Length: 313
Image 1 (tube, rainbow, N blue to C red):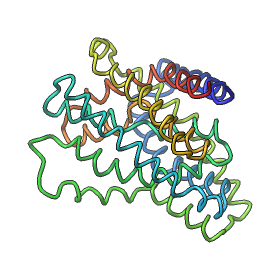
Image 2: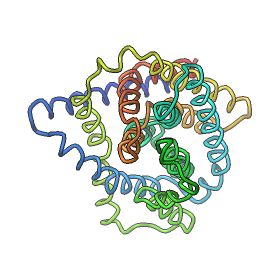
Image 3: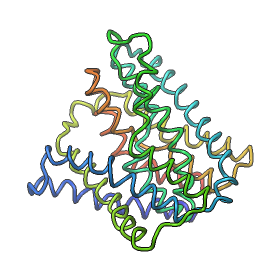
Image 4: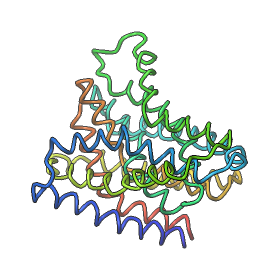
């Protein structure tokens, strides 16, 4: 039950910070323009710094070698299940065209950066970022290949479009992960002053990410999405049924308990904000992604504690 109470406590804190983000918009301390800049700041600087700092300070080479294969295999299994679930759901609701493609991507990819990492840091403070560093390598490959591909409109699909965008895998977050892995394997240590400075910057990731999420809620019209049952199917299948299935499967194969907790938690994340950005960039169905993000993010405040409770019994 400790896992359940840790998740519940973290989500209570998250809710308060999200409300502060809404308050910031309402009081004009932030606006939609600055939210865009805040998102870039988090994704291009603060989050990569946090990933690097937490990883190099929270793991040894022996730790990485001990868990590497289990994290990689568990992550690949998770994405295989999510890929199949997205395909089944869009067929079950007879979705077609670009809407179906973006819906599939929204079902498959969870908001690891803004919600998953802060939550993992709360429930697995010692090795959470070690697992996250390994996980994110697979996550980024899947996102910038399958995820980006699914947000390309059907009329724009061309031969080679999948491989053409693999260059986007080389981004600040991925570079920080690879650098952290190198530091861990070589057992290098950061100078004390530099280590503290990076720690101060990285520690702002959670509050700024949640303020950003709260702010984005102010610019969404929930009435457009509340009656679309397919969004609730994402909640039930992706955020409850699949995490429970993954938990049971990994436990059957005697995966390390901490890794089971880690993968189960990330499998239940709400839809990824980046999918909406991809859809906008590719002139696809951005509204589908926005609806999925809004409904799943609000309801994750219920589903994450529920999954935590059911897997703690």
